[in-house]
Length: 524
Image (cartoon, rainbow, N blue to C red; front, side, top):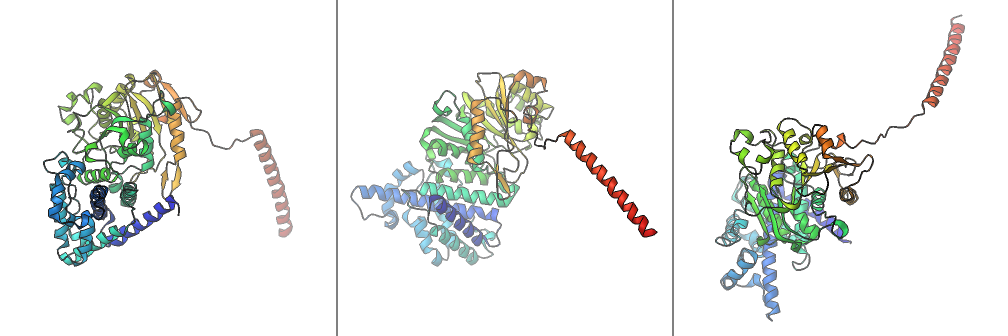
């Protein structure tokens, strides 16, 4: 069985387990239990396997962290916390809790205590914020699991057993890839089945890949791509899928100073932190904050960022000009106007531009209305265009995202351009069908990325437009205003068509004459 076949089989089993386990619990509500237990197993195996490896290398080949006493393990607590950011006692490892689960009448209390102990182990350390509240969404006492403690515990046993049975490989070999892949697959499936409520937190992997690669384009580098970056940032990071693309494209160690993001939804914020751990990102290499980025940004001390990627919420409401302090905020004040209260899209855009480094690139998924709407949004576009910050606008296909079917776009921003043009790319036909959604294939991504790199005119596909021409066009940034759509209508020879019509009319007259003669004979 090939690696892809193994992955597909694992995905099938995972989704079957997730559906079988949830019973009457809504899939979107149930995701926290499956994803949380997957995370619990991962961090347990990571600590146990690494400690065992150190002991075996020192000659203690029979050592097993899972089998020693909690008291003996305490001797290594400080070192473990310093390395991993947390500590798990041997008796509280996933494997041991799972073995006892079916006979533990207080399993819900046991799990609640384990999760609290893991979080508390980070208090007072550098990793405290990364673990604080991490298990809050795994409510082991929720009525969603059952009306009684007995029913809840039966459900928890099933979840633990199912997660334990997943063949995710050995931790030192492929566990990081397997755990991370399984986690992302589950989030994708939950998002696709949850409609808008799920889709808001998850950007499809192929879109994330395109955004990350755009920010890594450097026409002065071999193959036109950077091989390393200092810091990456997403001000509306959701589950973290956009940030993690840099780890996949470049490798974790090639993002030198780490992964930074902020998320307003507490549940999604927890998903993002878990996602970081499951992809092997150490607590010291990421800083994911909780809160409203527009009103209370958490990374003033970390900006500017070399690469910024984001898929912020579409046309979400914000305080706007009802808050007199915002117009003086250095992120928004340069445009001289605030994004409308009914649509914060360009407020996020101005925030990202402000925190973008001089040599950096930002790739932002935008609601199409921001490209052409008037009022304050037009004034913000004018600021962006006049100051030559807009590098490219890419029209994406429709029906790419979960929970929304409209065709969105990507705006690429730069502070240091070497020309006064904006590249417009019509990618509306760059997709393949996948189930009930459209999807960017690897070939589609390559096509769009190459067009961005080459920055040349291609009929019916992409066009370089002077910023002065955009100004004359009322600062409209819609791709369709500059890239002429290919006429796919059939070419018709008018002369030949007229001849055919004349022949048809003559034939009709001939038939009418014959029919009239037949009718006359019948009547006579």
